[in-house]
Length: 290
Image (cartoon, rainbow, N blue to C red; front, side):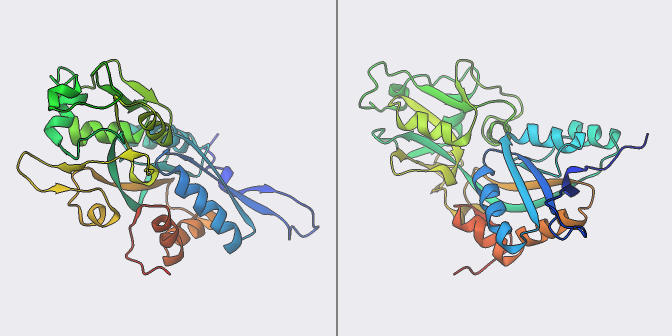
């Protein structure tokens, strides 16, 4: 039997009407927790643009979404990292040619408890904190005392390994030859990272800038000792001056058709790009928003 292209994109929920006037197309969209908030916002906004299309959004991590797209159980996979060669090969082996759409940019912020006095960190310091064999295990190793952190031990907050954020942080900060230290608290979602850091004086974590709150500290990041320290912002993500900025992607199984194509076109339109800007990410398409 020939492989059937993802049925979900055009799964029709018949709501009555002899001629199908009230039928709705359902687009299944799954993946990155970094993109979860904006994907939900896109889905809600698009319901007003095209009431005949419903977009069902779930998270689970970039790897989960990509696997579902490869297997034909979702129409669009959200990812905060690029597909691996092994994933592309698996897709092609399953009769799928993945198509990548960059839909925006994110500054991957480092989060500290609001009482942590650190304002500047370098990539090498982050590698020493998070990387296997790294010598920094206490806040005093960085020359600071954190109020409320009586143990002085750094509590590492990370993401699970199916997360695109986990993969991107490893690539951009730790490098290919360095693994994460054992003993980190690996969180399911981006918001969970920020929530834990907010309530844990000894903690440090990393997550998308859009999940920032006024109750955490966000240091600027320098690419190396003596280099300019750059704050994570929409502007520095777009221009690439922030050292841990990354593109945000959506993947489809082949060139999108029908309702899925219309939805992707809308996401990359001025209206769709203003939605991602409102959610704290940098738009891929230069857009003037109200």
